[in-house]
Image (cartoon, rainbow, N blue to C red; front, side):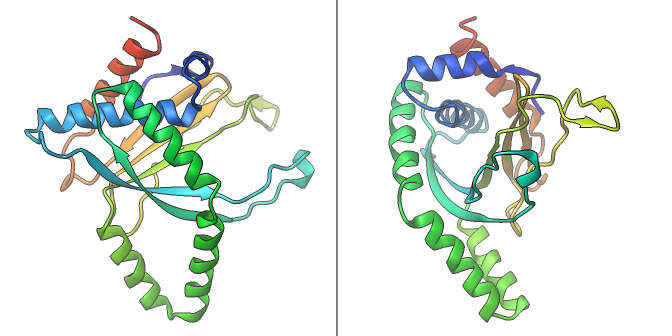
Amino acid sequence: MSHDMDLAKIKKVAKEKHVTFNDIMMGLAGMSLKEFMEKKGDYETENLNLCIPFSLRTLPDSPAELQMQNEIAVLMYKLRCSKDLDASLKVVHHDIAALRNSAKPLGNAYEMKLLGTLLPTILCFFALGDLARKLTLVWSNVAGPKKPLTFNGKKTQKIFYLVPALGKLTTGISIISHENIVKLGFMSDTCSVEDPRPLVDIFEANYKKYILKE
């Protein structure tokens, strides 16, 4: 897991470049993954297939209206791994906006529900396994609470979370915010990435270079 990153500063850079917070994080991730792969001797890979959970839930107007629902779609996205951040941001911003505004999220959600209703459980597992074999990693970006949550009169200081996985797809990147702090988590089975810490270190170095301007 990364050290604390400044949410406000990331959003400021995103605004300056006319992209979203998620675009910036994806662009930095693509750069970091490219550098990480080259250090491992892979100079050919230019794209990675991501699995992105896409929420279909509407935001409640008050805490009383909040319902715990698993209304999500699982979308596929080919992430460009490039050392040129501005070029990557342009592609990511266009592709993600087109994906978000298309019928794919809703169609995918109902397709998964239909398969889950019609197929036996064992066949659903096989279907998910087949899907996982076509992907490289899971990408999750969750907007956490803007104000600390309170439990039994005590305010939360930090959030600990697990990076999601899908079947045999045991590699994932997850981003979550808490107040004005953002953290990135990277998880992988040792058969895919023996030590994930170097990738997190590369991401943090790129964060300092392109966000903090250090």
